Image 1 (cartoon, helix red, strand yellow):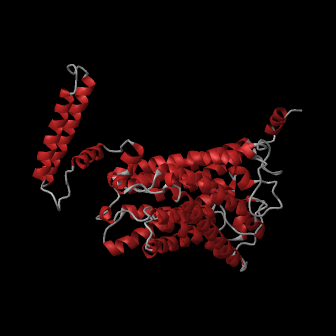
Image 2 (image 1 turned 90 degrees about the horizontal axis):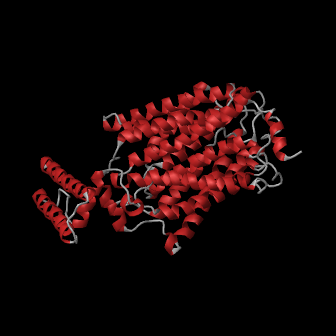
Image 3 (image 1 turned 180 degrees about the vertical axis):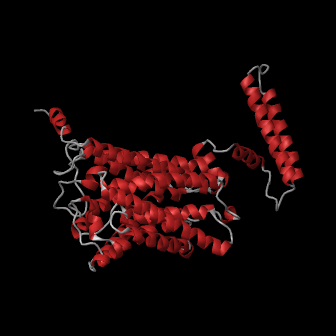
Length: 499
């Protein structure tokens, strides 16, 4: 009987509701990538807003190809039973993934492989935030491919493959606290090698679009609920419990962060609220299927408090972590893993009817703490060392420099790396830059700006007319230059009003 015919027989044993649940969960997890793209874009400045959307989306495409070729096999191989560190290539190119995921499962392995692919996409998207406003894009894609292969896949194998050492040791990591730590360490190391942004460009720095930050956070919230609930791989009680735990952790963390910001600034910060919510979601990732509901509330409060102050760590290390990846993902992920050692319960873990574990301190399993700490230390140490080696090698290859030039940074990555702009306003500013107009209110008189803007606009139109061998009959060309002129005039009029 052929493998295709076997496949038709296998379909008779699959549960349609379970397969649909996994596919829906995977799709919602990928929606988180869109949320991250909008979040990072809103947190950046206008002139680099589009580049962050591009780098997040492209990193997921690179990751998907890697996962298809050998990523899934290296990370979740079931045949590498004698290797506790990394899988084999038995499922290279998604071979041998059309049967059951395991003997007792009611879904095909390819659905599970697709679901896990989305998890890695989210991890790579988080790392890509480190390129903010100063990172070259092509070398980062090379980094992403190597990072996925050499960092993500081995650690994923440790905890989620039956042959992994952490899996066999009994470490508790429900939906992937390791991927939060891995992305944070990778992003922090990458930021270190990139160096700080130009100090004069950071004066009075603010996110350029807080509405986009809020929209991105909302999408993340929506997707994260299924990120954690979907890790049950079946629509059962444990999935519903993880869903509820995730929500409670996000609620209490968001409120805690917001209150701390109000205490110091006497203002209600929207960005602070979004940051707190994300931290709560991150902390719930490893713990939502293990701890009790009241423990999630406590976890959220602790996470919001600790991560709010953890945003200062980057100043201690003098690393320009533009998106606060270390605090919001790394520290929050560590907190979630530690809560598994303290407040996980055997009866919560056993809600799926098949998993057996002693839990943590709450159910008198006091040995769980050192297992969780050892696991955290191994993930951090391995991620930092291997990420640093990859960055060092790439940055020392002349055509793979990780950082753009000072001129490119000043102009913005949208112009230098993308060639497109999120906002027309940036294009007008680009013209000022090329004309040598100083628009800094501390140095320049806006009357000079107006005069030079008008002079250069007229000069461009004269050059267009004089360089033509025949009269200009192209309506689109005329309208485009008229639009440029009117756009410049409206901008200078706005500058006069500001003055």
